[in-house]
Length: 448
Picture 1: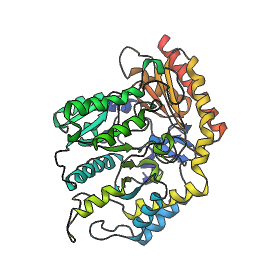
Picture 2: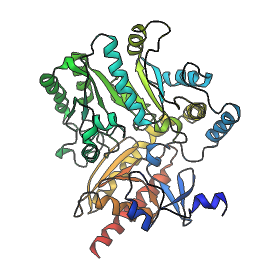
Picture 3: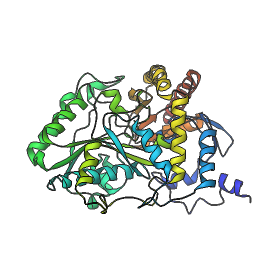
Picture 4: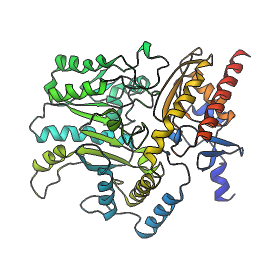
C-alpha cells in the first residue's frame, strides 16, 4: 500500500489511543479526515464538510494556505532546527518583535512554548518567579475559575475548572488553588454578546483574598471568554473588576487568550475587546494557523525586568524552557501568519463578519432540542437539552451534524461553533443550514 493511501485509510485503528475521544465508539464507526482546503474538509468516504469550528479554534485563516506551506518548506530546507538554550536564530527575535506590535499595553516580552497548555504552565511559573524576584516567595496561591479550560498539564488542570479533568487527576493537582464562580447565570439564557448582569461575580476574588490573604496569592487566571466550555461571555464590567481587585492586592492578572487571541472576538485580543490589560497573556492555536504546534507567553516589561534584575550576569534567570521553544519551523509558520494578518486585514474581516454569524447562530433557538445559545464575535456555543445522561446529546448531535456535512467540536452537551475568518456570508449560511439539518435529524432519531 502506498504511503498516501496508508495515511488516508489505515490498515489498523487498534494501536492509536486517541485524545478526548470515546475510542471504542469511534473505532466501531470511524470518522477520518483525508484532505482540507479553504473552509472545507474531505472525509474518507469522499464527502465534503464545512469546517464550523476552525479545527479546534486554530485554523482561522483556512486550510492549505500556500503562504504558510512555502514558508515552512523554505525554512526546513535552510535551517530545520536550532537549539533554543544559550543560542538562537534570527527568526524568533523577529517574530517576538512583530507580536509585540499587536499585544496591548506593555506586554512586550515573549517566551515561546510548544502549545497552549505549556504556555499556561509557563505563565504560572513566570508568576512565581516574578514574586520571588521581588522578595515575595509567600505568594504561591493561584486563583482560577469554574468551567475554565487552560490545557491538560498538571498546573493547567489545577487552575482550570472543568469538572471531569479535576476529578480524574485530583490526586496530583497543585496545592493552594482556589476557584471563583463562572459567569453564566440563568438570566443569561439566549443572550447575544455581553450580559448586563453578573459583574458582582468578580467579588469572589475579594472573598478569596479575605479568606486566604491577598498577600499570599501570586496570580488570577481567566479566559476573557471561556471558550472550550461553550462560550461563556463575561458580564459587562466583570473583567474590569477583576483587574481592580488584582491591583489592590498586588496579584498578577493572567489572560488565557489561546482561543480568544488573534481576532476571535473581533479585536486582536480579548484584552483589546474588553478594554482590560492583563500582566501576562498566553497565545497558541491561531499563532501558526494550527499548522505547527506553538505557544507564546507575553509578559509585561516590569515582570521581565524584575526577573532579570534579580539574577547576576551570566546566570540563567529563569530555569524553564522546552526543546521546541521557538524552533525555526514554528517561527516560519507564525511569521507567515503575521503576513496574512496584515495583507488580508484579518482582524477587521472577523469584526465585520461577526454580526452576520451571530444572527445566524441565534436563528437556531427555535429548535426544540436546543436549550441555550451564547455568542460573541466569531465564537458561539449551543447547549443541547439533556438526553438521559450528560454528554450523550452532544455526542449524538455531533454525529448527526457530521453526517449532514458540518464539522465542529462538542464539549459535553455543548456544540462549539467558531467559523474561519476567511468565510464569506454564503459559508456562514451553509454552516447554519447544515447545523439546522443535523440537529433536526438528531431530534428525529431520538423520537424513533
